[in-house]
Length: 83
Image 1 (cartoon, rainbow, N blue to C red):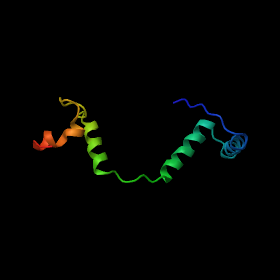
Image 2: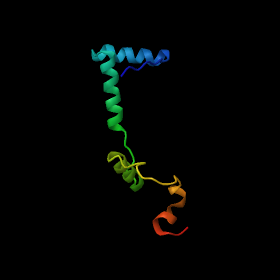
Image 3: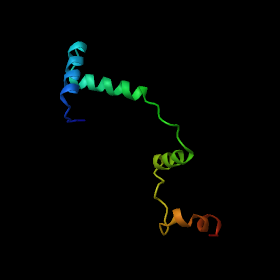
Image 4: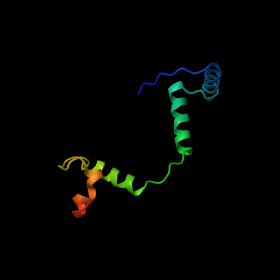
């Protein structure tokens, strides 16, 4: 992936100093910084809705059923025959 960005003078200087002290290429240094940041980031647990959506996407079931497209609004009518 190619990423192009512009840093202010302070951050550019700090990044170059870090590169100099680590003896790593700039792409490798940025990759290491991203890995560390992602490893330290905690993501909230998956909700039931997110889990269902993920499973539907994984099995290509999302959007594969025929209907009028109003299931989100009229789901009771379709599931239980009532509004």
